[in-house]
Image (cartoon, rainbow, N blue to C red; front, side, top):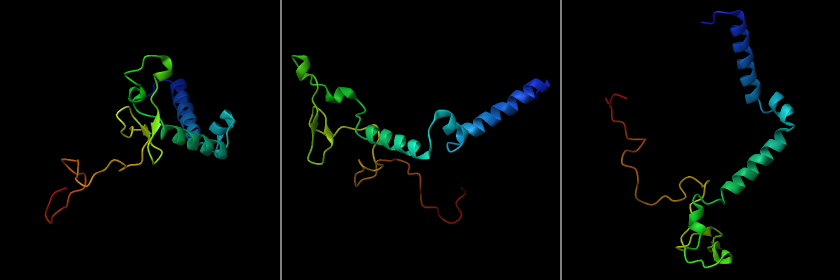
Length: 121
């Protein structure tokens, strides 16, 4: 419902800009000075850093610290996971799905239920 040709042209240019921005192997990467390998390397680094970054930095703060040198409490368990001040494994910003799963289901209404014949979906 554009009333002026200028608005139509701007809408078309906006759509083209979004299309090219989504194309990481094309104009967006050329504009950013990156290629596909650089992008993959950056994604790998971000994934590695987020997988070792605690959700709450307070988990690493020593509440009994009397000086700046004692403030951080960074310890690792035998599997090289960061432990919080309670000596439990810290929750990280990026974790493998199901890493904290238990043998009992934690979900009250599962996403996948058995469908019986005649049920309306």
